[in-house]
Length: 149
Image 1 (cartoon, one colour):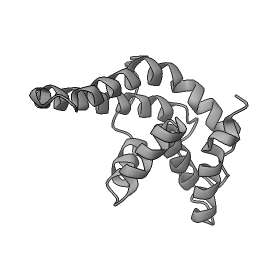
Image 2: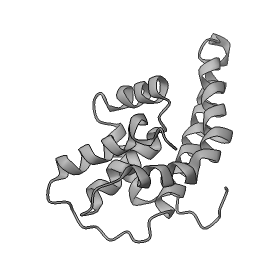
Image 3: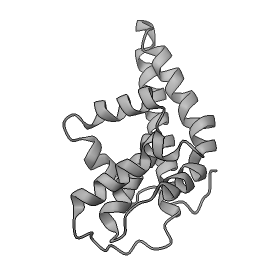
């Protein structure tokens, strides 16, 4: 954690920002996160990899990626999210909530840099069927696919 060799502004971070800004995506990701306890950064990474590689994403890939960031997610990102959500109910803490949200976003950027660092190569080989690649990534990321971990 806190590895100075991490590249914060990478292709995955840019991809995530573009995807997150699409209509309905942010809400869907929060629903996945809150109802299924899914790490949305791992799900986004699975989709990112699926769209950049010619091979399908497997549940084993998702487990490996989840393992790589679980401690950071649990000890840094989730507590910050909890503080931000707690402050949402305090009308006197609007500025503080905004500051915490900015730190939470930065912590997510670090998590995404950790995930990006797991790639052995960033050579882009587009899949023949992008829809099938996305579906395989989402299926591999589902709690049912990785529940045995």
